[in-house]
Image (cartoon, rainbow, N blue to C red; front, side, top):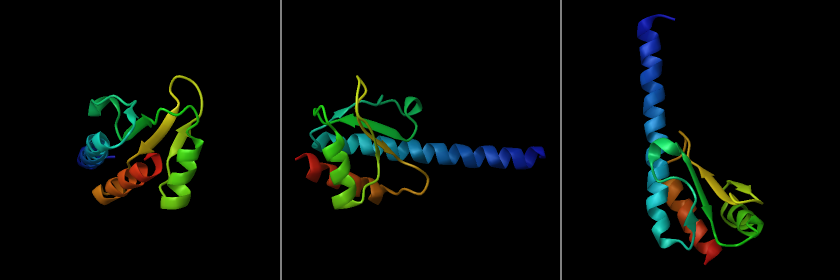
Length: 111
């Protein structure tokens, strides 16, 4: 691979990382109106596109199930241990509107 192609690839990867971090930061900011505790570091460079929360419930499965069945918000969950909770992961194909929809769904599910 020549230097120009390598440099172009690096710039594209950096733009993608910046976008994922921005989406995650936006998500974290929107959590202020949600009854949930942020478990992810607020510093973007320490969380990339991942936002992890806890709802205060020992069992997160009902929230996890409701987010998908009622709102089609696909996330992952950690069922046990000190890091149990719901894990949202913004990626390149997500938009600000996707984050807004996920926050609205989260508010509805844990109200």
